[in-house]
Length: 179
Image 1 (cartoon, one colour):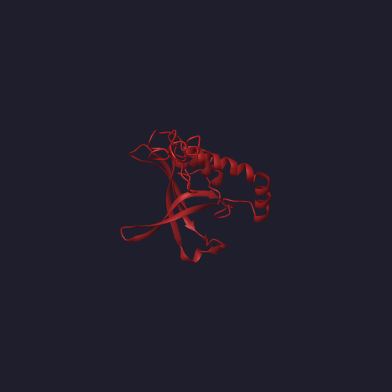
Image 2 (spheres, one colour; image 1 turned 60 degrees about the horizontal axis):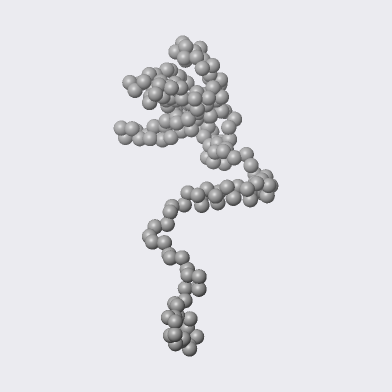
């Protein structure tokens, strides 16, 4: 609906976006939300506050999701024509009013929660091919990063299996107990 460029006292710079929420994912499919007339606003930080450096991940997301050319002038002059996109929305209550905030931006055709493109059959094939190697690396990491044992170490066993030595000329025990 609207966008602008905002500089913060911290030195951070963000593209602020106000968007109409026309569809929402319920985790299985998209539901039409146009009848609710809902809006969300958010700041997509493109310059970091800590060192004034470019926030590469956010800039890449904006470019991929909306076709932004990376020009601050196109934002300020309103010549940027964002393509349809998706937003990750977080709800928050501010001054007792429920608001929806844009937390992140994604491409329009992205599958919500689509962090995986591997189905069960493909996962089985990958497990058969790489599973033992992955488990070996995992085991090494766990072994090499395990905390050191605490307390006293147990003494090394004696060569005779730990049996008490009998003094020379002493009578040997006749029962079956080895000590």
